[in-house]
Length: 307
Image (cartoon, rainbow, N blue to C red; front, side):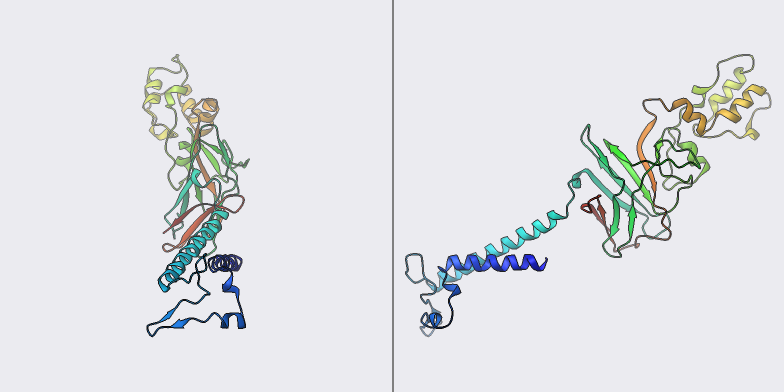
């Protein structure tokens, strides 16, 4: 608690005591000397400093109850001030986001942030950061590209809605950019090893195959139909009797870029998951006994995670 708040509590205490004693708690010197307590052999009993509202002396028991009541009031005031101090640092987004740290103390460590918003609400999270209260280390959420193109960087602020997951890595992106997941992103996983692994959402290859013809025969279509999603076929696995047109399709059209071109306008193309890379080097969090806060753009606490 700050010194200002301690001062407030002291002032409140004396105000309460002053009201309870009719202001006589603030008496000094000679005035107090006339308000002496009387001794009865078993303890002090009341002086006219401790009188009831009608002027009659309070008993020692009443005085003790008064002091207990005042102590309780001061305790409540202390709690109120503490709550006020805590609430000053709490983000208005507190109940909209939660997170945890996965694999702390390793080079695979990452933060997993879950957003849960009411329908129609959006939240800008670029600029939020995770900060250790133990070491002061920070991990910042930057921008991301909506449709990643390996080697290209066209990042924009991240605006989330509904239920979303943001995975924030401390290292560098294998494709040179932070990005939003889409249903073709499994092809990116095949080329690179992401942490955690990107799930395979890819459309079936047969959905994008050319129609049956003399050059795209049943043998070709049967082979295309057997291919797993999100996998670039290896020409070493091609059947010997494939036509040249079929091989050309397999070598040039079964890949991430073609998948995006064919499906970027699908209603289910985008997935509410982002992969963010902070471009930090080294290990950020302790492997145990660390306390990490998630701070919004105003520096207010959204959530806290301890491990």
